[in-house]
Length: 614
Image (cartoon, rainbow, N blue to C red; front, side, top):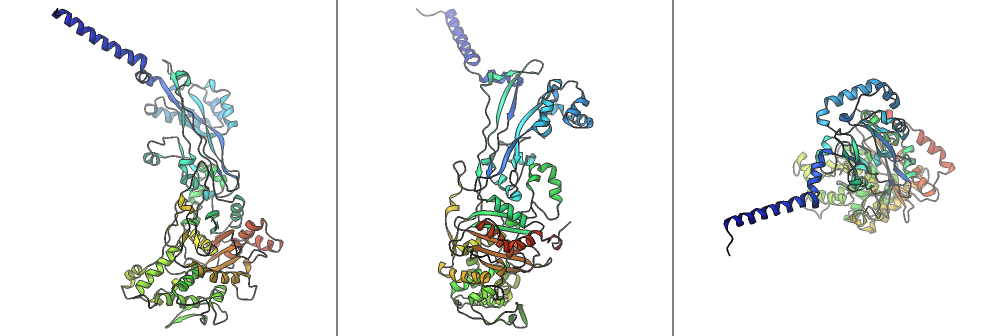
């Protein structure tokens, strides 16, 4: 029997009602999303900041740790009348400070709403405890714990970098990761390893009552999220060596860089003047002082300063010349107080003449390398000087010069090595010759490199022709380093040529006073230090003092580059400073006979020689 019209309507209506009931049941009973949305206006979420990862040195010493501090938070919409004088006394502030802050919040009340803002940041536990005992008297005021950085070991301020509150520009670039009040690494390792160190924020959710007072945790805390601590990092730095290098470099402008040749791990990286770790602990307080310092302590000269390498670069040209076959270790060149070409002369100091390759390294003869470099560029195997220059450029870059090495340290400078096209622009194609660019033979002219480049070059010499890309973070379970740091990088010069250079470097240091060795001041009994001095011309004052060395000669453990602005001859400052660093690392202490040298280096004051922009 067919249903009549009335029954059809009743059935249809019943179906609609059933669907609505089922939907309401789902929304109100089964699904909490809508309930949560309705409660959102009465909920407050407080941030739990994670503990930042600890930074260790290679031996487990803590370079950067954490300590607890408190921010005094204010929720303006919850503040009631309070005793301003009493609060100011508890906080150790002037009443005017409280008045000004509250007036500022009143102006911003519409935009702040029920948000909490920090009135005072980084209160010590002792300071916060005074407030915590009486906080019931000050509705709307609360404390928020966070960890801040502390530095148990005074080593590597520039290297470690600092952490500070993010600004609007930083937030705009990292919208999903940071918000106002968060902190992030801004320089050094803190910035380079921000993702690993920062951890993950957590939060607590509370419910407000009808009078906007926090009443209880939402769902008994089921929806809260715990903060996740950041990963610890182990660096390659040797903290005692880093600290010792900083002591040596006080009141000097320049860098000391030490590398373990067999791994490419950076043992020490000193840029002077640098930032004391006490300043890093409260960077906000000291930032103006640091930024206005004419010696630019935030500028890391070890990786950012482009210097002419000076005479240490002679070793590069010597190796290229050997590879190209334009001379042999027994080739002897004369020197008459320099290299003469036409009416011009590239000067040199007085020494015996003629000399062979080993002696040229030991005595640092300019004329010898002018001859070698000219032979490289005038080599008949190339169609013209431009082709020879470009091949020279490729050789030099294979040593890491003229490009970023690819280290894991931020802001690394690539330096500059000229090629044929560079000179064609200045002199026109065919308008220049070997003597036009002869200053390149002794590491002057247009060459620019960093102390890190020089330390890496020294590691190449120590390894007899190869290197690992210098890096500052070690592999660990939590933090893995890029596989490229474990791949050997070879130069374009055959490894068989390097022992010929090393003999000359050994003689430069160990031949004894009066033998003609330019670096005898760097000799240490039993260490077999091999080194090369450099004196780099400086248009802004005295010459720069340069020295590279490694030790021991066989199975080297450390390679060092020292670059001292306005230090004069390489043997005056750079050589003794570098050799003291080597002795300290290998022997653990400075021998009694070298204590006077150590004291002279530490007492040395060169800041008045450096011209700075004020």
